[in-house]
Amino acid sequence: MTGSPDVALGVHLTFGSDPATSMVVSWLTRTAVPRPQVRFGPAAGGSTGSVTALTRSYTDALTNEVVFAHHAHLSGLLPAADYRYDVGHDGRWGLAHGSFRTAPRHRAAFSFTCFGDQGTDEPHDPYGSAASRHVITGVERLAPLFNLANGDLSYANQRTDPVRAWFDWFAMISASARFRPWMPCNGNHETERGNGALGLAAYQTYFALPQHDEEAYLAGLWYAFTVGGVRFVMLSAADVCYQDSGRVYLHGYSAGRQTSWLRQTLKQARADPGIDWIVVGMHHAAVSTAVEHNGADLGIREEWLPLFDTYEVDLVLCGHEHHYERTHPLRGVVPDSATRTPRPVPGATTPARKTADGAGAAAGDGAGDLLDTSAGTVHLLVGTGGSSSPSAHALFDPPACWVIVGVHEQDPGRWHRQSVRAREDAPWLAFRAPEHPYAFAAFEVDPGEPGGSTSIRVTVYDSSAPTPVPFDRFTLVRPRADAAVPTT
Image (cartoon, rainbow, N blue to C red; front, top):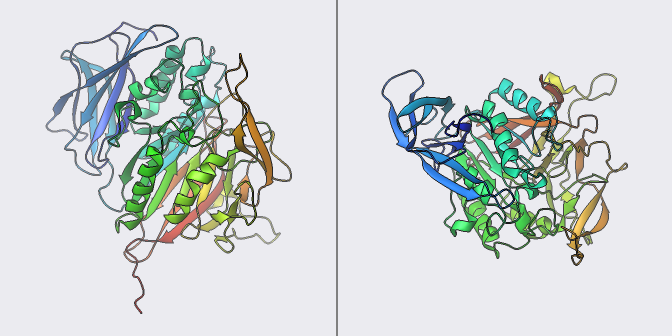
């Protein structure tokens, strides 16, 4: 948080209402500024336009500091096109600059990345690590179209100066986020007591996200966007989770509105002949083999997994647990399971080829499991973005899962209600990597040919150092939505 008061800090991008034709350029200032603007044009040169930004602010409840965030909504852009921009205040340009590429309008190849639970590498930040910055370096080496940031971003609600935590985080990620959208979901460490009705005013001020026609206090907490043939659905899982892990207990905060929206959104996506894939992002998890961390939450299994089954969600990306693991394709529930244990689908996984000595193929050689997501949903835990408290060192062996099935009454003087947990086996587990505490996942979408199949190739990289090293690779496959339906 250095520099003059009107410096443009923490520049970051998010997709606008239509990722093919719109983009939002956002930045922070320490004071109100006159006429915050963005000037933009084709990267190759040519005519330019300018947009005046909308300013949002909130007063931090802990420090009483007023925070200003500015959001310039760029529209009328061309699909799959490169643009450059710079930021100005009151006609004084060049305060910050960047570039981006818009999303394709229809099915096309593209890539994206994902991780959660980051923090910063600042020496005064006890909740991040050097890996918090290494993961950004890794993402930029791959140069995806966009990144998904799956909650617990700055750990602001753990800090005595939460505004500084946010500013430090945005300053760090701007090395990536001013060149490609970072699309977030909120986690338990985004809730800050006293900041808005839900403790999420800071998050809602800093990010301008697609809207869902709900009341203002719910703005941006869940949303969806489409890139090519993929529908991305970003959720606020604390709404359905039993666990009390933030500064505000949010269980049931939307009174069912988020779940109703989710049902309709998934239904529309699966009925759309132009949408092949449905990818869900959220912070909390429905599965986990961690011994000492949070565990899975029964609330997600009760409220949302049946919808994921009904509408054939392909992929669920989560954080919250600070280790990497993935599941088999899952559909339904293991019979007689009191904790609604997700059921792995027999035959939905084609294992990686074996070498002559019986060992599995190496992650870097292009081989890996083939997972049919039309048969079941694959869950990935990637809460491995840099948090100083990785859970990779303490996993159940043999694999098992703590499931949060409720909470105790709140004890006086405690921040949180203690979880009520039940232990279950983990038949859903396909792979985990305790030797890789820091990681991010990269996804390459191949649209395939009309009437055929489509695939997403997934590579998971260790991000303990600046040079990312792959350690898990697999491919998701399913028929395209325009595949011919047999007639009888």
